[in-house]
Length: 202
Image (cartoon, rainbow, N blue to C red; front, side):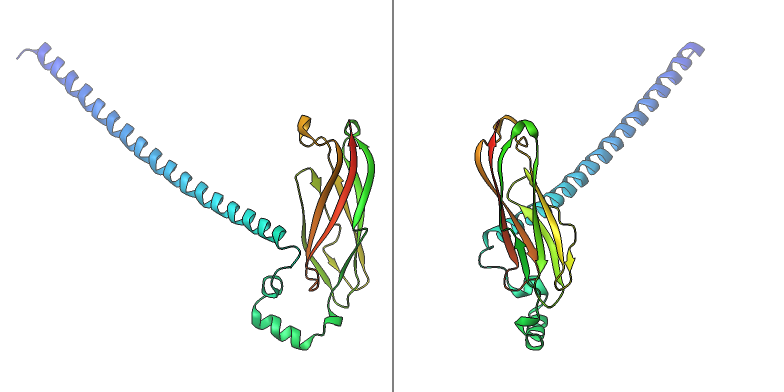
């Protein structure tokens, strides 16, 4: 075997070895990528399940607004509720009052953009009122509350804004009514619903 043949053979071996290394690297990269995709899919599935559970919880809360949730859901375990109930009369409990319960914005124009109405929240009870949150009936309405803990006799503001352009060309015209549900530790009315209405014109 002459020098030229040996050289070609060595080059062929080097090329073959290089191809094997490249194939092994690509296989490992593909395997790692598949593992990463599987991890991301599992993580996304968990986040979706958690989000669906939260949405279901909110939907259930909206449906049961009139009859209210159980005491255990709002105040802790059954044993804690029973102990507190025995020690504390109803007269020594927080009590939420909202004025007005129906706020009429009158006629508003889409051309002028969002409109805001103020609700005043007052603790008429004898213990601190704790407001968990307020959720609205649609994304076109926002209801931030200034203070989430009210001492007896204390008041705070909830400025509810309605955006008539939120849904673009599909936005409602004419008479609209939007609701806001305030969740608190008021035993008699833990899901306090108020409403905002307006007549929307172009």
